[in-house]
Image 1 (cartoon, rainbow, N blue to C red):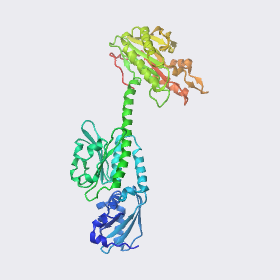
Image 2 (image 1 turned 45 degrees about the vertical axis):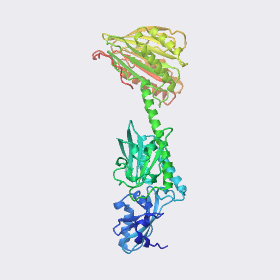
Image 3 (image 1 turned 30 degrees about the horizontal axis):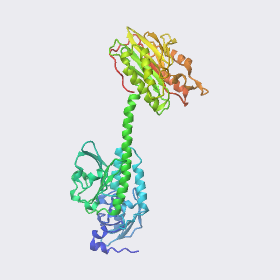
Image 4 (image 1 turned 135 degrees about the vertical axis):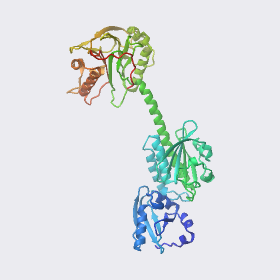
Length: 543
């Protein structure tokens, strides 16, 4: 069917701007002379070339002018609109009228119908945009996605306004086809009609009520001329507004229609939900990380002339905490006793880890009484009995003091496996300490044992997760005390860190991929002769 081009010669851009379909006029040199609003949005988002004309269309147009023959339909796959067909109507002066046919599902590139009939393609686009918003839980990435997609489909530029700290505003602006830019500034949102209300979650102000000339410069992204239509809509969150979305068009870009405002509000609702979910996730992750630091066992080091080392593995490999724990409290002066402890709370996972935190905090408060292990264990026993928890714990207390080149260790067990002592000649002996579990009986009893470590000797505290680890050839045999003794006999003279790594490696090899309990091990060692003694105690970094 022939296409009449006379209206473009009489009314120029005014006629084409109102066209309900994408149509553009290119001059003999390939420059864009006139275009409808929908064609401008299509050409801008299709890989911009000189003067807003994409390279693929410019090549086809210049080829048409050079050959003088009417070419076949030009087909191009646009990253946003998908397959696009361009049909030329040459003119005698070398220019041409190009009519574009876009597939269904690209209503974001076409003007909304005045009767409100957006069609099913609006929902298809909205679903696609929702998937992009929900593909991340990173707040910055979601704000960038909201700004970029809004500028690409609904306006010439978009700005996402989020509340900052204090009176600052957080802005993420983006031009069509550009990259989002982050800005933080002190500004009054009341300077923009409807923005202060949108940030509080009130319904949006119709675009026709907003004077484009009243929009302050801090809201307009660099590279966009002021004076075009403006639309402000809130980003509703989960009970609390997540911010506001501002859509801007260049001068001459036409006003926002009713259907475009409705579509923008639907997109903003999904963007607000995604931002709110990401903010909630980041806040929960920050709280979890803060609490996790207090529950993680500390990284041990050389304290007051004694070597300390520890290792921990939770029952579930993806977890970082569980029911086993260890801790070291340095003495106030280098000649005092350092209190070390290792224990096991009944249960696994987060609830057991919370209980370990309570036990560690209670023992920390009882440090002034650390000289009397029996009294400390009885006070801890009462604290657990009066707690609303029904969990109990086993543990070993070790008061450590450096005496010349030897290390004296006072050990008191409470329902826990007795520590093993690795002598310099490879012998492995068991401590004679024993006692009742805490948190069950009215009183906790214990028998204290004192061990002297010569240079190069070590005292090994461990949880039953090591000895009860099931694996081996049958997959059901326990690692056992005898294998632990054999492993420690081979560790004579080794540094404390090496002994810990050796035990953990052997336990992991024995388990293979099998299930296991929490496993903790701590080594207290007398440094070999010739090692410099370090005076002054330090708490140690958090693992």
